[in-house]
Length: 403
Image 1: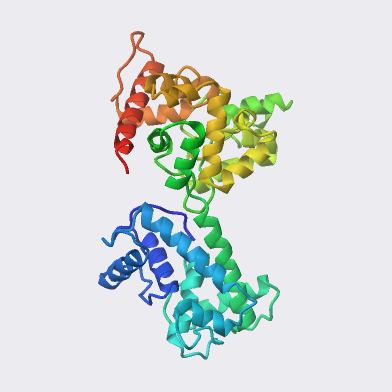
Image 2: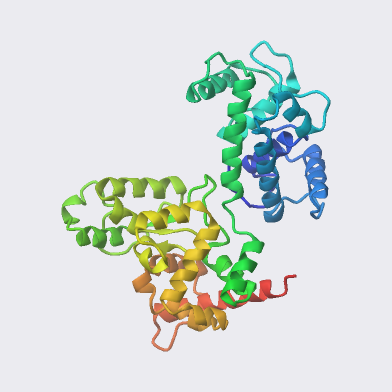
């Protein structure tokens, strides 16, 4: 299951198929084919009406969040083994007959097989929903049965349905709880005595509003020049390890080794962990606010492994760490007072060498193509501060008028 809040468009086939599969599982038997046609749009509007959303057929952040929560609740209800499978099926769909009958390669029950395949698609992101219990479906069911120590016979009986429900509940709960909600921002703002719009502004400018990749892993950026320093701190000479590791061990910062993809950055991290795990974890920036691992202590954690676990849990925990960092570094007051230049200089300016935001800022600045204005000494730091504070002010203005 993908962790996404992107607005669904016709050309985003992967997201369209996930959307269709979720709606199908929740009782709207539409095709799961990646084509955002009239039937899919009707199903979207119906779901939005059911959940008191604006029924405009547009699936953006708000609809995704409600959809994830609805699916989580639905799957957890199916896991209630205190109730018979037949009763669970009838209650879930409001029918007199449960759809959860035994199915296998001899089944002609297109509706049940389609529902089964939609669930498998959510679990593996690639099962084709055809309504035919084909060889691919048979192999997937055997794999589930083997993994769950069930009889491997490719027959979806009660024990196999239950195993699938449990896996569906696990993945739905994980995805539903990853994302930062407006309610939590409001709660955190009240705790900190700060305007919610100020938090939203930093979230937007720092991360574009996302702390996780679509696969559910926290966003990271591995810094080989920090790994160089961290290896030295644990008594390892990085020079002798550079051969075949030039993209993860280097003395000076460069953006040339960034991959821009989850798989690429996690591959770099994994190779670094094989050399020294603690040094590797401290050498990556994590989550919405790209806090460096070596800042785990000032972000409220005793060990970098605890920090990473928290960053992997949810964007709410990432926000908590961000505020701990702000308080420890005496930066919070600038955000509270909406002193954008003061906040920018201290969060991403005069301390950006210390906090290792230089790499991220350099990339951002390159992309800005000179929008910022150089300071009196013509420094990159002043250019970054001016552009960053301008973006924060603009983002705050966008959110300030929200009801």
